Length: 447
Image (tube, rainbow, N blue to C red; front, side):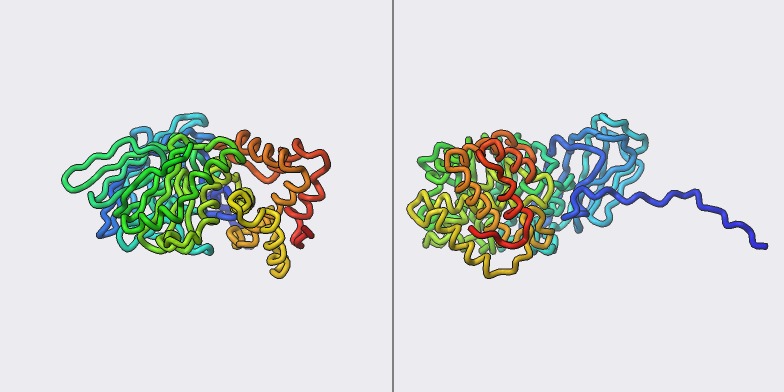
């Protein structure tokens, strides 16, 4: 007779909750961050980043173990939680796992200080390289959608918005640009320390760092301050290619509502070429190839500016709703063209409808899947959806809806259901057939 098998009393290790199925490894549970304070030093020649981040948060549940997102090759040398050393900390699988000596109750204050360093590099993703990247002479950060952990420990999810203080010391020939208002600039022993404050709630992917041998100047004629940061050699080309920005700003304020950031808007042009421009909170980043004196990047300039309302101030809760960023910014390109004497939005809509009709009909706009988050079909179909809505409800109600959207969700997070629910208040007919055809069906509807 065989002996009964004794059941193990060891519970299997719980899998961490998935915050967003599009990026299952990003984001963390158990706390809510309200502020990040970064004190950084970057050496351009050796691509060496070291620093300390202080994270102010509150526990949303009882905490004994919690995690932060932090990618290789950044390594952690010291951790303190509410001034005390944890029982242990370790990095693995792009997570910093911290075990507390004593559990914290739900609602408890949480101040986490992490000292870390390394030679940062971008992450290789299905969308290309994302994160902290060396330039020929300097560095940039392209955070969307999961690049923030390449340069600081964080809770990396678009719904996890916080304020920021960024202090960055680097070699004195270089200018460092971060989000928000420049509070101070101190030069000492061949190094310059730049301090920036970003008070408006900002998701981690929209926090950026731009370092290069740049000059800066203020664009004239804008109701919202617009600053340019660029290599001195590109000043003439910039003045030509970006001359329309003050008028763009004026148009978008009129159509979309007040500009959402107190510190104004900054445009960075790197000395290197970039495949595509990049958006950050209050900042857009272009490559030298977008500033060549031909004016060929005007639609991209409009697109990135529009993201300050759609994507940066009003941010999706989950990545499946990315059309609320990209479709709106794409439609802003058409609105600018219409205003500036180019093709009307209706002409652009018909043009791109013909193009989309010839492409595979397998994209679901309201839930495209992670591989197609940044597919150009999503941008264009999102813009077409807005144009169809505009035609149906009329210009007055359509632009009142856009202003209502940016006001209601200013510095917050929203979803497709939030938008369709709000739109119902501006329509005299049911919008359900429109949403079913354009958002929830794969086949391209007639325009």
